[in-house]
Amino acid sequence: MESKPPRYDEYLKMYMEMMSFAKEELKRREKSPVHIPKEKIDREFMGQNWVLLVDPRIGFNSRIIRFWINGFPPGEENNQWKTMGHRHTVEAVIHVLKGHGYSIIDGVRYDWEPGDFICVPVFAWHRHVNLSDEDMVYVASTTGPLSMGIGVAIYEDERYPEYWVFAQKDTAEKKSLIPGAVEIPDMQRGIPKGIDPAHYEGSTAAKLYFEQLRFAEEEEQARRKGKVLVKGKDLKFERTPMGWVAPVVDPKLGFHVKVMSTLVAHMEPGKRSGAHRHLYEEVNHVLSGEGYSIIEDKRYNWEKGDTLSIPVFSWHQHFNTSREPARFLVHTGRPAMENIGLMNTQQGEVAD
Image 1: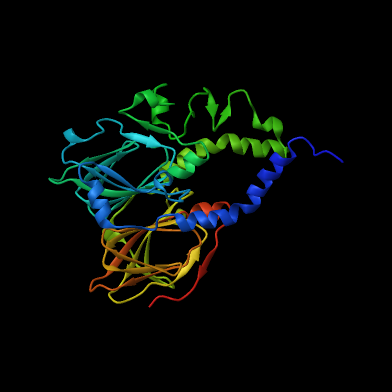
Image 2: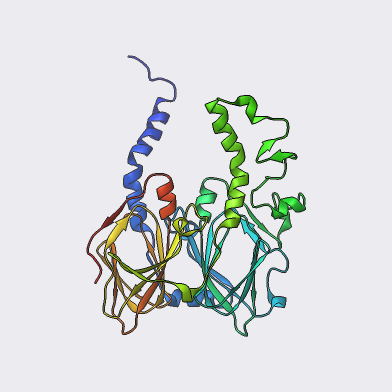
């Protein structure tokens, strides 16, 4: 009898794990929490300044989006950050719910009030100052799970210099939006001094490699050119098959984001949204109104302050049963799926 090759069973097991992944993923999506009620959020928010709402570390099958609520007491003297704040290799969008003040982002001041949005450039130092007489409260979404999952997450905070990876090296490193970008001296457009691209003229391989060398510097410039602040009063709602929608943060609107997009959805009293499903994550936070959603044939009642985590490729539709307009803050991983060629959205019933 012919013997099995070495490690045959081990490799077969790994191959079958790949074969079964999709069906196992469907089970994980079914088990993932969907509805986070306001009562639970308020209860956990009492006595602390932030609460995670959607995160893989607390049982959600989210691979891209982290979503939480945060608060700051009034006065700069009470701020947790005094000088630089913190920075991270993740995209971040903040929506102000209460309070007014300003943020210093990459050395630039941005004044905000309730209803405003802040899109923080990747690896830009940022801190927030609450100028009101009450606590500032905001909800934030980042792409932390993705960066952590692929092993490139870097978080540097002025309060914890012992965990700095790059900021401790020199002033130039603190100002850069690219980790490690200034460690190699005498660079010109990403190319070390002494290397002449003209020497490799006509080489397709060299052309591709020089583009790779230049990428980080050009990426840093693009981050600094991207839009940061969106005033809530400037939102423009337009009709779509899914209902009235105001795009907020999107790579097609001048924001330098590659992974996450943000919009606000609006439903008049007694109206319903369209129904659709898509191959990307979505997190909804109810800004106003009361009603219910049908997600994969299950009903979830919601009110202002609730959060919904929509499983990937799940049919979903929203219904406003209140006497006031309902609005959802919507964060999605659509840009990420577009960039890797896996974007797929399918429309069902059209909105009222």
